Amino acid sequence: MQARPDRRMNTLTIEQVRNQRVARWLLICCALVFAMVVLGGFTRLTESGLSMVDWRPATGWLPPLSDAAWDQEFSRYQQSPQYLKSNSHMNVHDFKGIFWLEYLHRLLGRIIGLAFLLPFLYFAARGYIRRSETPKFTLMFVLGGLQGVLGWYMVKSGLVDNPAVSQYRLTAHLVAAFMIYGFMLWVALSRLYPAEGRSVHPLFGRTLALSVLILVTIISGGFVAGLRAGKIYNTFPMMGDYWIPPGLFALEPAWRNFFDNIATVQFDHRVLAITTFTMVCLYWWRMRRAELPRRIAIGVNALLHTAILQVVLGISTLLLMVPIVLGAAHQAVAMLLFTIALYLCHSLRRV
Image (cartoon, rainbow, N blue to C red; front, side, top):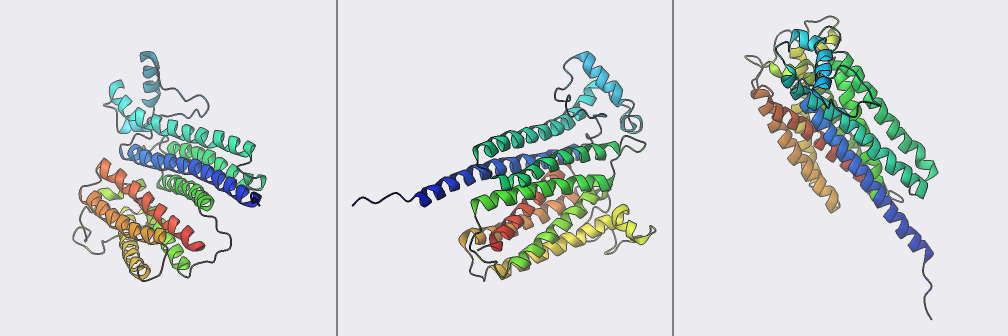
């Protein structure tokens, strides 16, 4: 007697294929956001972010295409505080060098919007994304759009009097990028590794706490970048001749020192970075004795190796007074460390 096909298994197989396709799309979007953060690091370190003094989200796709258009763009830049106070020596050729980085940064943002929106509409129309899930994916798109608005709000802070963006707005822009990235990554992992009928691992809470510590350290790094705090006390492990430098609480009220005092901001980032690295080492030591699935064990080892690389990059960046390549690499590896931590949180939430 011939066995009848199991419709339930066929349906499950189709659902798995659909989940994989949606997950691949989201992971591609994550890779684009990762590239966006790295490019943003180069833009910040080269001080190119203020080269475009207006924001045309609908019509700013094309760069200047003629000498007259370049002259017009440059004339607008010549009225900005950055040109008047820092770059008055520049000619049109010099201006192009900083313009292209900011232009590519904004162009990549638009590409990410299309790379998300068009497949989303396709997957929703084909039933790959259920109606109950539509608000979640719509929120991703809305957050991406708001991130563009926040980026312009950040740039505007450097177009008034002081040719430097607010460290508060820069850090908010950075953290928002991490949150959007983490949101998409989590949903992608949930498509690849469904969590039905499984229990939370006892070490999930510890992993979540470590992930929060990593994120707090990244936030403190945003203030270091915004204040250019890596340009002072370029020694390690001491800060000049001090373990604890003077003037850590020179500003009033006291809370401002954690966000506006250059020495305090660098000191805080050092303490948080060393603490995070120590906790990662202890976490790895504890996890290596636990019975874990192979993919989680690989993630734990990757977390330790990435943390070691990040510490080496951080110290090297500081000692060499923040060279552009090392500074951008330090930011990129921070995002990689966050990625691995989030992967471990997701894996241990349901095992």
